[in-house]
Image 1 (cartoon, rainbow, N blue to C red):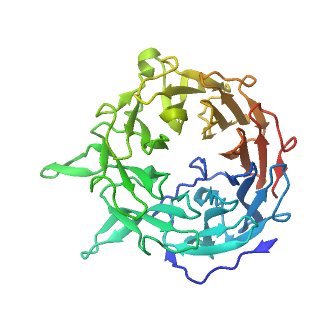
Image 2 (image 1 turned 45 degrees about the vertical axis):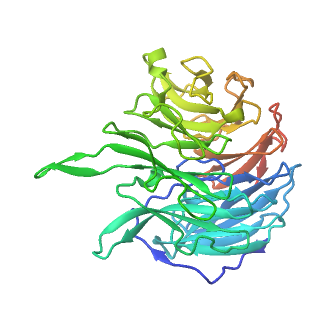
Image 3 (image 1 turned 120 degrees about the vertical axis):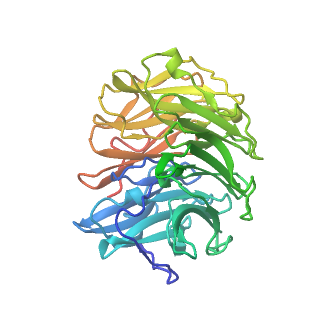
Length: 467
């Protein structure tokens, strides 16, 4: 076991519980407080995992471990110990991991200081041998992505105060290079906006050292003396280039602007330098929009509806996901209780915004459960199809669909574990398969498993236990 020494250049921030909301994620994630290790590929078919070990009722140790292609632990029995923390619940809600592109990883996690009301945010880089390269402490981090050159870009929603001591919520982006230098300065790039919904912030790489971010805003405005109405909901996108400059119009590109409420938008790269965004309007239809690398809207100004509810009157789409497909296409996934019990459906969208599969969508999974799925985070198979993991009261499952949207493994896929109260994280292995990690909050145990493209289990029945 290696111990990571803290670098004494940190910023301390004390915030009261409930003031801020911290979404957690990794290569793929679900915004949930459930116990779950975070995983990313190591570039050679193996994996790098961030996990925590509960050593007492209020003490947690944080580790990062690397697993080889053939399922061997490369950084000792437990891995590299990053830190320890006071805790009263699982901390994975506040963690991310992404590959550094050279066999190492950049991780973000949060520790409690003495009591649950004081937090410290850590971001650190681990090299391919498990040695720490640098660690920094920042005011806040909500998401990180690789910068494509051994570093990372961190995004967060922060609170700032003007000269009149009026508080405002702003988006902050900080870029850290492979050596740990802050390329965009200590304060980073600050996007000042009003009414931002904190949990709506999402970010993807522009594949040129910058990032594309989306978020949602809502405000109340006075229309008559003493009366207010809710302002139109706005979904907005902005691109920051590798130099930390705004690449699109100053206030961002408005994707949607209406009095009709929407769920938080989701974003995916399109493989061509642009992005595709999906959102749900008024808890009914799903809409998509595509932006090119210059920030131009390529589809209808109000977005392209999937028309699911037109095809099936009792359809109830919810909680959409979107991933990049080959040749600029996208695949959309959503939950749907059209059959009374919840199922997962999928649809492919071409570069013109046209659906390619049957209008009602292709059914991927149907587990006969009454509640929505606790975890769902699809990834591309690199060949026009996708892997879809999901968890429910029946356990954790993994299914694969081909380029025509057909589920090609056994009915409802493989049951990875029948344990309840599990959550998962998934990453591509770079060789056509996937790696999935999961944790059980009841026992605070973490496991990891690898599947090849045919669905063969590669790391033994039950996977590799991490703790």
